[in-house]
Length: 123
Image (cartoon, rainbow, N blue to C red):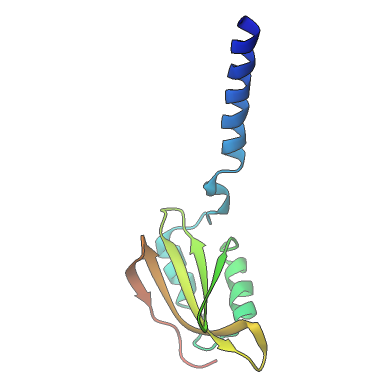
């Protein structure tokens, strides 16, 4: 009986450790909302998606979730406070169907737009 209790306790401890190693915090970018707005405001309208991702990775925004909705391509960068930087791309079939041209950027939390980020004009 003691062996069974000891084994179950060890299994529970291992499960908690595994959960810490693979927690959702590992996909969170360690950047504040204010810093994300500052970085995203330097992006230009109609920037090509790989160029946007390269620019953001130089500014500590590396973990991204991508979503394809209809003709839009959406990139979500989870921020340290739980909100996310959401980039919306229009498809660019002439260059790359998985790429796209940046249309707009917003900060959202729980599906609610908190801040609409003004992008600079021109490519």
